[in-house]
Amino acid sequence: MELERKILEFALKMEKEARDFYLSAKDRVVNPSTKSLIDYLADWELSHCKFIEDQLNKIKSTGQWDIYAATEMDEETAQEILRKPWVEEELQTSLIADVSDISVLRMALSLERDFNNFYTKASQKIEHPDGKKVLNKLASWEAEHMRIIDAQIKEMHKDFMAEMGFEPF
Image (cartoon, rainbow, N blue to C red; front, side, top):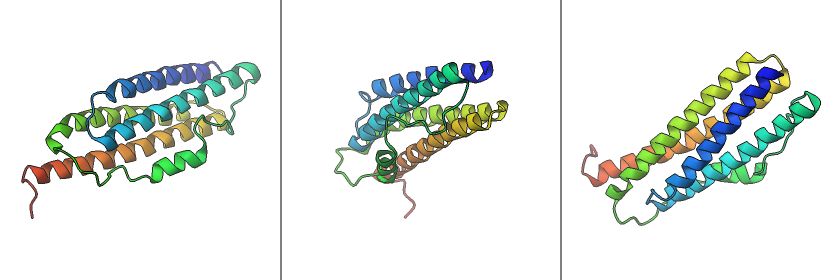
């Protein structure tokens, strides 16, 4: 269980750093829907930290994984957030101001992609089937974050290009 413990300790450190990034990035973004998304991402990372801490405690105390461990964010709330259209029809003063938002979201996308890759590779390195399930669950959460962030970036980019007169039609 030494490898599993190291994986989880590293994952916990990554998730805490991601939460810190989102909390600091929240002050740099302008678009209200981007601010809202960044808030949710910070909350998700906190729930990932709690989930990973629970896994570490379970492994240390029993030597077993807990595939049924609850996250701080209940499943119903998470599903509601995932259904939320991040591209909201809000009146904006200027999309040019949102260029920094796109940069923050690109950094967020890169972070989430790194996490997804880490959890996917880590699940392949361990033998315990429950450990694989837990790490694959984390990887799928990160993949969903990537999907949401990517959709927000694409919509903002499209709107920015239209405002600049670059749209083809």
